[in-house]
Length: 310
Ligand code: AMP
Image (cartoon, rainbow, N blue to C red; front, side, top):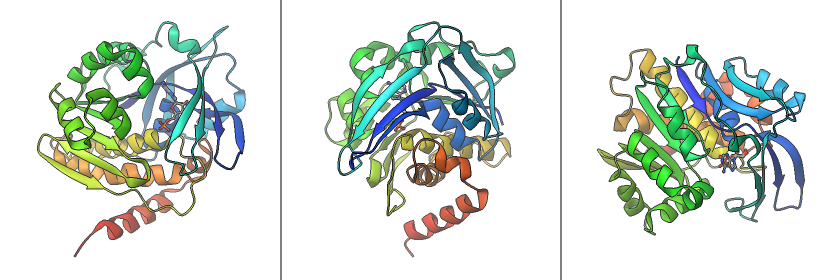
């Protein structure tokens, strides 16, 4: 499966509402995405880290045998991206406490020649100029989807607009869709984004699921009703990993003629929702590292049942 993700590998510090602090855990948009997508097939990863990344974090990535780390650069003397976040009582809102870009302000990582034939491209959250530069390197792409975040909407708007014009789909949080478009209503916000060119926008609403606004229709999907949320960090990236993993898998098996179509992406959102529901059960990649295919299948069936109306 020639699915590729470019984005961050990070060292996160997480503050939960109960006052618990988890320092220096493995995170980053590409790490979460790749871990989730690897349950669907091989996923190629392109990212850069500094030589300060603890070896235990490398070992954690190694627990996902279908992540191809051939595009992971470890740079001597550079600093790994670091991010700190604090969650509000409802676990749905969070404040960024600090962002240390580190290696992100250096040259973007190189795409290995053997990755250049990638067909399914996910441009996980990082500087939009880097996302654009990455996109250019996949001339045989069938589908490209990007994620973004408030930091980039505020600091790199014109690069972000240029990126949105070039991708098939965009995934972002509802407050980011509002911030980007100036529209409070999610559907209007997404339609404004569609005017720039993409075929679809997925607007994530945390525990309230997501809205899917495609040129050919609109759909809503709830989140999996989780009883306990330990750490929501990475939910968005694992959602995208499940979604793109499913699309790449069915496309390469010849089961999806048009991977960007309303029906294919809509079903993929259910896979994303299920993968995200596991991530939030623990810190960092801990839950994904112990997850089995059987647990995924069981929860997927349960999710389909609870979202069907007879
Ligand atoms: P999510 O909870 O899915 O939005 O993703 C959280 C992950 O994104 C964390 O593990 C962070 O390391 C990473 N992250 C936070 N801010 C940024 C940023 N501005 N650019 C790229 N990755 C980020």
